[in-house]
Image (cartoon, rainbow, N blue to C red; front, side, top):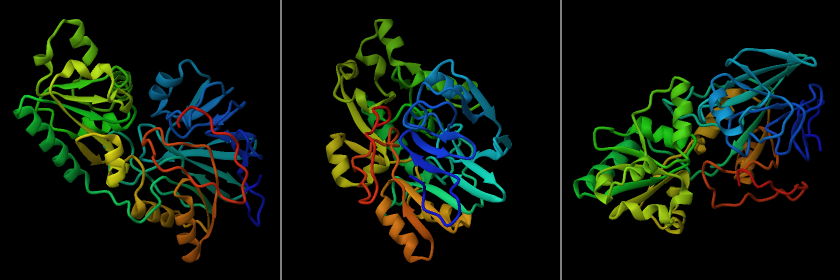
Length: 361
């Protein structure tokens, strides 16, 4: 199904993903294809089995860490490459290490597919770069006016205070977060002088990929390595432990004895989401743009046509239409691996939707 446009579309939606007919390639396909341009390494955007991958040089290590030995071609940010008459370049999206927006140009017409992005500063990845275009395909994970993020300085002051208070009481602080992107951003922002930084086994390989890519992170230890030394519960007292949400409530947690737990996600802005997580604290922290960030990013592109993808598509589409932008809802199968969305995306009434794949949902 082509994206509606008075001009021949540069990108259309097919059962395997977003497709560029002129270039004969896909962007973040959700099923294996011969050629794929990958915006970032979260599993709902970067799957296995493609015949050829094009991604950023900055994200090469994390992509290979997650997908293994793949046929990968990389580009520096802003470096153009031409394929079948289509000029392709990748530009910083500010989402996670190596994340990119995909710029496509044919005959002077420019389309940009955002992938996932955020506009807040993040020392672990290149900052979001607005790209002028005729058509912009934007995500809308947090596309409601209620979503507004606090400054990072305030967020990390809250996390440090929580950790310091727990440490003074001899408790372990367990902070649940996503292993790729969120965990490294937390490590880069907390005060490492408060106590030991420990991580779940799912986090440390990505820490290594970040360090190998030149990102400065404080020293961390795997919880499993401490356990192998036969340490008792006192070895964890005062530590900050980063673990994926799947560890919550598992037997893995028993080793810590007396602990406080918290969850870091943009969804923690909602009281109901905090209650469902069943943790003592919720820290509002996202690697996606909030409502003001989405509006700013879209405005900076200068696009006269916008397609809104995964997330709160309806509200953002209506807002853009009411403000003079030719906006449409565009359904994809991208999930919220890095946010664990409790809010299902509403299917547009006029679009058919293929079954959602398992990865990244």
